[in-house]
Length: 337
Image 1 (cartoon, rainbow, N blue to C red):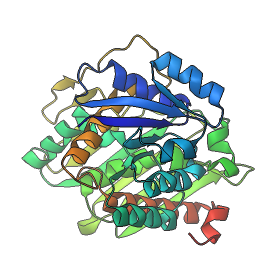
Image 2: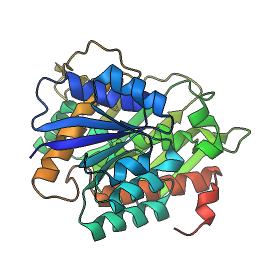
Image 3: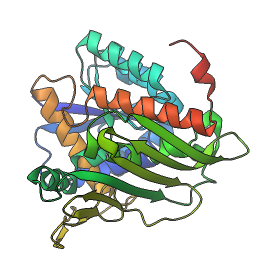
């Protein structure tokens, strides 16, 4: 069967997702079938750019149509829950940009809806499907690093004045926007819930965190230190240290194309090219999450083993803890789902 994608919103990340998809040499039996946006003229322009056949005037119209099977949701953070819920309730599978929801309560509710509908849903943590991450996983499991003891991650980009990050009503938050990449990396390596979380940060005038330093303590005194910064550019690499050596995924660690193995060997992971420009670095790698979604749906799975519901719940829990410790509170934290 051909899996038909509907693109929800026509913003920058949606552009990159569709561009990565359409320029990949072989996506298999799947196609970008439709796009919807609040402004139909923007959706029409998006459709023309990406040669998408169908344009819908509203999200509701697309959700209720029989023209798509799975929705890619690239909306702003506060809209993730309601839009994902809409498409699930209309019988569509969902790939939703991270963070999946604003907090743990929303995340749990949304995943329960998907479970009740027996539909696939995944938080779009595209890092998990990077060829370099697969190589990193293999290196760790091989024992070449010995016992992993420490993880260090830095992610800093000067975006404190970008509306989606700085404004509370748009779901702004460094830990929600870029910090999730650092958190998921630590979880990818240690694969257990931390026994202790410690966080300090800096909050802007709108009550949004723009800097976070997070220490995660795991069993047997293993730790991760994560530096998240929306004010300055950091050297955005991640290093895993073991009793026998270390391995580094280079900048940009969230979808790296260079990895330095424990024996010092430098491995390159080339990404496919596109005639259209991307808005964000290494976005060609977004296609790998689309391939995973298609694979899972065709196998009748309702979640990906590489980015499971349990993982999304734990990441949501960690984000909530960090926000609370740093002092960031959203209205949605006080409302029932």
